[in-house]
Picture 1 (cartoon, rainbow, N blue to C red):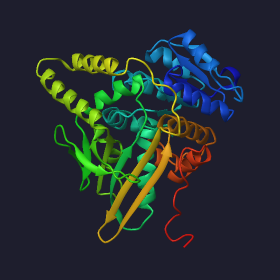
Picture 2 (cartoon, one colour):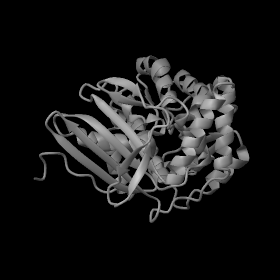
Picture 3 (cartoon, rainbow, N blue to C red):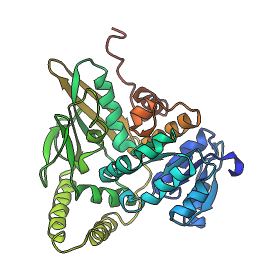
Length: 374
């Protein structure tokens, strides 16, 4: 590939794509910044800091499997940042596999993750390629915290809470509206079970005296990651939100239920896109770690044992950039831990991913492994 770039960031001109560009450039990883608009790509690359070790190469491409396959030829890793993934992701996954590259993305959409597992796992595994969706704050941050809890022998159940404090991007809003209007799953005794419609719970968020309302938020990825786990029997994920946010989502869910009685699946996808564009018409400013703070809480137990893990961090979208850059670097170095459809921790190691966040000052140092340092 030109300039020896072995990485393609597809969707490089969006909010999250820009953060990924920056993290790759700071590590000196050459990349092609791909998308539909040459002007937007050039503007995105112009925002790279002067300290960047590489600048990236802008490339436009049509969004179809043939054109994407041609672009991806010679790449070793494709980073998919285009969404909603359930609407437009399939040609990217097909083209990446055809080109013989590893696939990672920033999705939060569980139905897309399930599709990748059912339709692409065997193909990627046969070629010894990684297919790792949700290498992002949602849902890698909860998984790495759950893995810390699973370091304790006997743990077989994890209850995961996300408490982000960042405004969603345009793309994230479109994706989460798909998520919350579809089936939302948790893992119960090794089987995926559906949350009740319009479900909420209340939870005490660590490091605050406030009781917050929480939503399943599509069910999260942790129940999917642990569905076939040899130890984990139960996994549940919720997201703590403001009252205004919870009330709005509940109203959307009820309106969607009524619309589903008369609209086709394609029309429903258009409807959630319409709602998303109305809710978030412009991208938010870049996160400020001093007030865009995050909490991940995991309460875990087994038959006669329990453990709590709390990770305090900041800037969830910045964390996504770090997750992607760390995963990409490990793939380029041949340090992946498995192939096929695979979770971030299974692919790259939970402590390795945590260390990358700690080094970039977006997460606290994690607790030591049980039995170490006293």
